[in-house]
Image 1 (cartoon, helix red, strand yellow):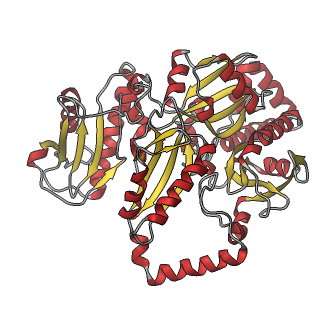
Image 2 (cartoon, rainbow, N blue to C red):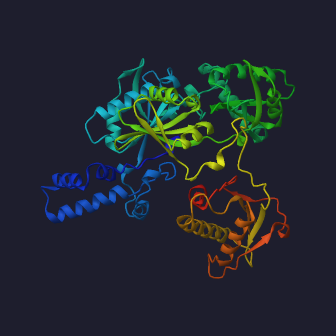
Image 3 (tube, rainbow, N blue to C red):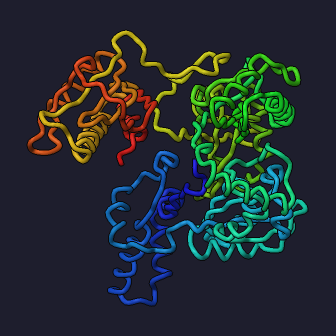
Length: 531
């Protein structure tokens, strides 16, 4: 997930209209335009309206509250190509001794508290910024417009938790990459201790020589694995245990007879350690951890894709509640079953009168929030949660709390695969047209069908001239057959369904959005991406 690519829609006009009514807006508009002629007033409002709608790149599924008027934003996108005020300028907050001194993860919450409390205390309107997380020792920040950039640069030189702040543009961090070994996307590095500058330059030369002389080594398959406890839902692996597990892995690597095994810990998320293994020998070495006990935790090794994916929610609080650590403590105190220790807050921003945090959380916490109607008491007041994915009901994702590998399964009675074929073999463009037409049909049905109902599909693969679709039950197959027969992406199209046994065998295929799990037609809008 690219945290820096998350942009926000700051539709303040809608917020103020809901809070103060249209009279507030009329008064503010008149104050701004009182010295202009009537024609200039009209033109300025039109231009202001266009600029507010133009060129927004927003993840509508992560921020569902900003869906209003998205069609008009898309319409004006080509008319106003470069409105600087509406794009995010990527900045970074570092220590003044950077890169010798890096910002640690423990300082993130005090920094969040300081930034947003200072921002709220400033004069209105607020500078539009969004704070991400610490990556490679720098706190990443998105600034929307020159005013936000200037406000952020005004924080330079202030001391917070023993760190004297320094503001840099994100692209300026690349010049320090040789000094601190940037390039790892994880927040914490669990590999070998930091090397000296001479050792780093030597390793860099070795790396370049290996790329040229032994390039076959870097073509080994990369296995994405995860290390969890045997009771993953009840006993998560904390970051404090990671050094002990890393030491155990190092002992296994030293005793291995295979040349150049490479096992790299990338991150700790939701109580699971994510690991990259290069080559089959590294994978075999990692699987030896199965059944071992480290600090009284019995380990289990499985594929990362078999873990239950974290649920993404937007956590909304009043804007003055900027102390994230304190708010998490309140939530845990009044809601004992929550597992806030496994939460990961990846983005924070102000929207109107509220502070919003994008949270990756475990399945147990998500189900508790769902049963509470997405409102939990946090000591001071009730805080609200918004489910980011448009999944409607989450009943399909409720699993036994001791099962950390459960997923939606299409291996049920009536499930199978069929091919969508044309009279003549389809080109890549024609297959894309078929794909887009089916998605539009799903969107139309989602607007009229009841939530939680609808066809269910799995993988959708592009073969050479035809499309292979996995369906969950016979009802889904019947719906697909009806839509395919009436589908006319181009005038000469004559589409039909063909059983899997009648399709030719091919070794190569392009899978469009693999492991797609559609629980209803309304989910299809957000979960299927049209290229």
